[in-house]
Structure formats: structure tokens, C-alpha cells
Length: 133
Image (cartoon, rainbow, N blue to C red; front, top):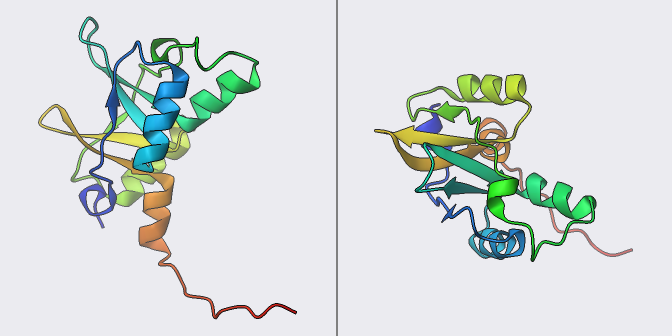
């Protein structure tokens, strides 16, 4: 199976001046764990993940005062739609991260996460309804 078959095509793009709270609200509303950060004044794009926001809050930083640019990963590993899921999982394991921005023609086409890969490799099994004891 290929990355294009597993990736989410819902790509949330935010700017570097978004606060972490604004980013969290947008990520929650879209049901995504990462946002692509596009800074028109800088080369390339970055990624802000739920873990980045969690780490900031855990350090006692104010999510209304902290901006995305200060927490964005800019040394990003990108995936191609034609990568296999094994290639994507290997890149994640080597880099220690859970999301890859998928570029198609140099533009973000999607995001593939560990959860997307697991969903493809281990389809959800329905459990019978549990009866309270």
C-alpha cells in the first residue's frame, strides 16, 4: 500500500503568527494532530504537532502568548505519495516523529500519520457491545 492510499487530504495550514491556542482550536475542529506552518517570509514549510503544543503547555508557557513559529519544526522530512507505507514508517521511526507532510509537485497534498499507517495495516475489528455488570 502507498502513502497516497493512507494519507489524510485534510491539510490544515496556519501562519507563523498563530498562537498555540488558535492552532489547537483549529486542529481540534478539523480532527487533525498536525498543522502545516507556512511562513511567506521564509523558505519552505514547517509542521506544528499536538505534541509541540503539549510540550509548551507542560513547560508552563501561555498558549495565548506563544506563537507557532517558536514551536514549529522546520527541519521536516517529507513523504511522496508514491512511497510505500513501509518507507513512511521507516522515516518516522528513524526521525522519532509521528507525522509526515506529503508533497506532490512541491505542494502539500496531505499528511500521513502513524495512526493512518496502523489503520491500513491492522483494520479495526468490531467488538460486541459490552453489557454492564
